[in-house]
Image (tube, rainbow, N blue to C red; front, top):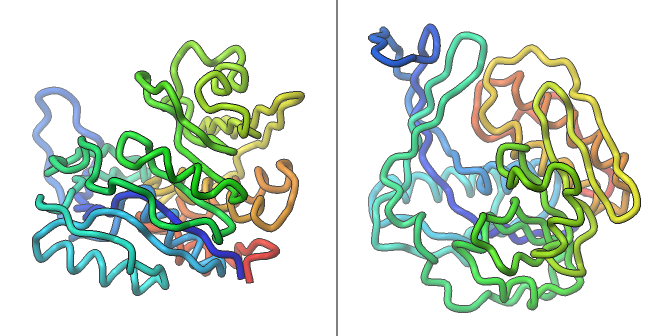
Length: 288
């Protein structure tokens, strides 16, 4: 069984169903559907655990009762939280407006402690794990990369102000990447990411996704899906990609598995794609 450390943030997603996503001046009737575990890195951790990896989540939890609920929920998915820590701030919340086609608009609430570097002055020991996912180096130290030189290191795209962003794989939606990277994504990323960069992966929604390497690129089409809830699709994609690469599969196989996982997640009403992966039998070699 492969071991993965995920550095990130968990949030409480508050779901509101609307007949359509609102425009300026709209007044809509809506239905509250309660809360659920959210946060991109928490979603990814739960998906990797569902695929059979041993996953440890490292990140801040607030000082309120909601934080206790989030800890219990992420542990219910089989994710370890022993290295997580408390922050003196309320739990982040996201208000998700979900329309009848499954599209959503996300509003971040109570985000005070997600805008600063977290009080993790040094990275915990991760030298023995097989894979590491870091939500962002804005919130976690780049020393994580130094502590895990042999692990598969996966990151979201660099922020505009980044000077150093070490990773093996960078993965995110085209909206997350700087606009000037579109012509040569790998070369642009390598200037910031450094020599360990292997692939830059850009997801493009219905247009599929592309992986850019030093010598060639790989495209995968989006698998048609009956969308119920688009929340968490990118997290499922990243989990599928990471899981296959951890299994030693090539980038083409990994991209196809990632596209399948992303499509599976939108067909189920939830933020965390783990049960969607389980329900549809999406598994990846090497995860057991």
